[in-house]
Length: 56
View (spheres, rainbow, N blue to C red):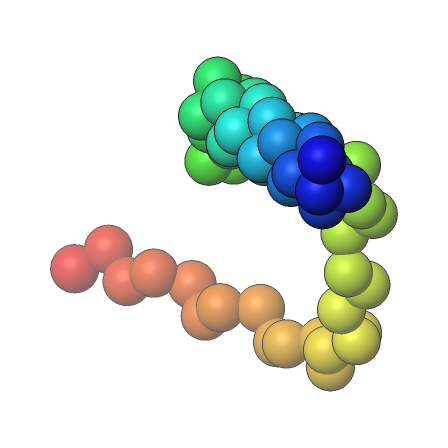
């Protein structure tokens, strides 16, 4: 008996199981919260307020 055949059989079984789990796993939902913290943006310079609207 060749010793590589049982190893190949186990390897094939693990790969098949991995593919099935990947197919069953729910896809990521856009806009869903992530476990990673959001990036911190650099502060921007303050902007002047908008001028008043004309009523005419």
